[in-house]
Length: 313
Length: 327
Image (cartoon, rainbow over all chains, first blue to last red; front, top):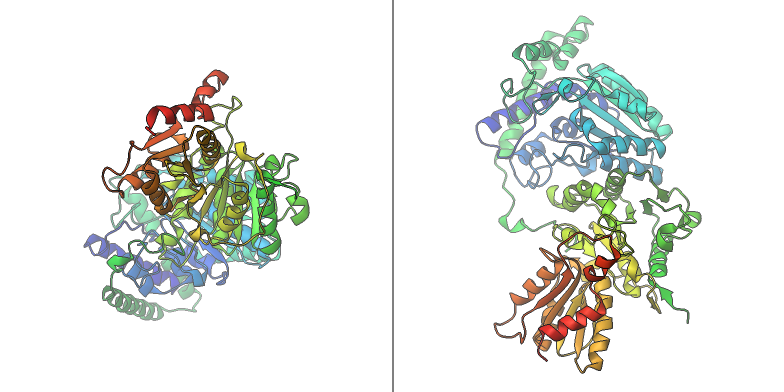
């Protein structure tokens, strides 16, 4: 259900962006839901998770409060960040989601520090750093891998390799289409997984996270996936994509992680088409109910402009 | 009573914090080296262990980001940059992340990291080993910028910075390390209550400084006394958020204002101080126009010949005062 909820929520956000209800940019990850869902099943509230610019799935993976997500993207004071962040600045402290930001790689060293804090606190909690393939081109990513290894920091780098950074295909940015070589260079155990296979992601992250809790160490998962929408907002961006074609998109849609899971379960006779239809309509209800609720909420008070610049003023 | 040096005062601040707050830890380059960052970190690794005193890889960006991240998770980290110039690798973590973490998530999170950064000038060290960039950082809402000029403040402002729930850049200056004073017992003071402070009373001119510039101002004020000029010296201490009240009251009394700053002139802290005073005093209050002494707008020269003209000194400050003001 988690993947379906995330998918439906993002499609709702895409529509609202298109019709002008949402003001700020939205980076949608439709097609990539399996990664956050597979990883999140292994996490607890005291773990420390950091997202990036495309992080609706990352926060919903650990905090399924749709109302708060919708309220935030609509800029309402009941949102995840009290209406101060919008789609690109999401946090849910009580669930361990400690922030997502649109500066590429900006949160990678922060997650590293969160893991370092866990190690010093001897809590057994781990840090998750979600990043994309583009982020592996920033220097601080490599510094972070090195520091994580040399200091044995319990951090799991989850690289969602969707082959594109904004409009640019990876083949135009790097000599190879995969990035796990960077983990190998830093002696970090890594696995390349099918990012559209939720079971494989769950199994791999489960194995790594179990080991990390026993002995603090960094790991890296590279999950190959594809985003159905363009870099930002609701368009498919075939026109502005370098090496992004309608044909590629259609091929990737055949690898839809939700349909693959549903089909596999139906084949194993533990799920039926009818079950799926019931689930889909339940999800639709959930979306509509939370969307309508969020739309009725207030915007931040104008007087709050200067609030929280400093924690205690 | 044995006097304490500025560098020992910094060390005693670290010692107090590490002893009393288990969530305090330190990371940066040189923390295990016999040099111990000019002895300000001496033997802390031996006393508190290499888990809490972490000498890091040559990665300013990742290490500063890690300090920010750890601060978001309940720790009180201090990241040490032995030279401010190298800290520029870490601008994203400081300016984009730490400064905004409280604001952009609606106040539910905060990043109480302390970034200790050292100004280390002169000695023909040149353009990339000598910068004083406090004005730059003071421009950013969300980061508190602190510059201790006295031995007492070197220790006490470090403690206040680390215990502050906001990100703080604490900037000390190598040219102050040999200053000595008798230290009072430690009394924790919340950083938000620390404001510019009058270090010497006078009634004919207000001289404002920060860090080493305050030290210069004090020396100059003593010489001016001999010439019959009574100068009041105010030490900024906290550059951001900037509280101009004490300076304003002083200028209303002395009716003359000079700001000495160890940074550059254009868009510098001296401009900020002068503007914040001028916009709040009645027209015609000032007997002479407000003036500033800063670095000239050029990179720090490596040449010893140029260095003499580049950095303000007592002699040229006194000449400037005599030329610019009418007592």
